[in-house]
Image 1 (cartoon, rainbow, N blue to C red):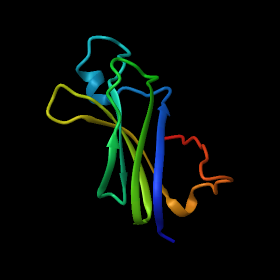
Image 2 (tube, rainbow, N blue to C red):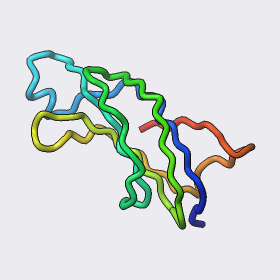
Image 3 (cartoon, rainbow, N blue to C red):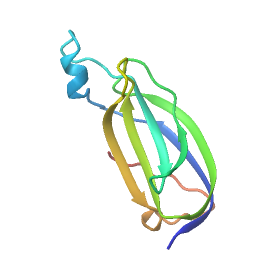
Image 4 (cartoon, one colour):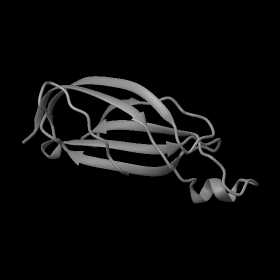
Length: 116
């Protein structure tokens, strides 16, 4: 069943992000850190927001809040990218979840963590 309502999402942190093959090829450091950020979208088309880029880390902490009003939304997507000097940023990981599969809140809000 589609979700209609107010979405408030906090991107807290990520741990253990791995460098991409491209960043490993272009680095003289054996295990370079990445410059990660998260794109947040709904139904593959509505962009909710983007976190700031955290420089040279595999364990970024954002604590950034995003809000939007949704009508008949089905799917939430989080995609982690490594900011690149080259024209396109490198894909690192993604997560997608149907709003129907989200845990049911006890109040108006709830916390959950995802592994991507």
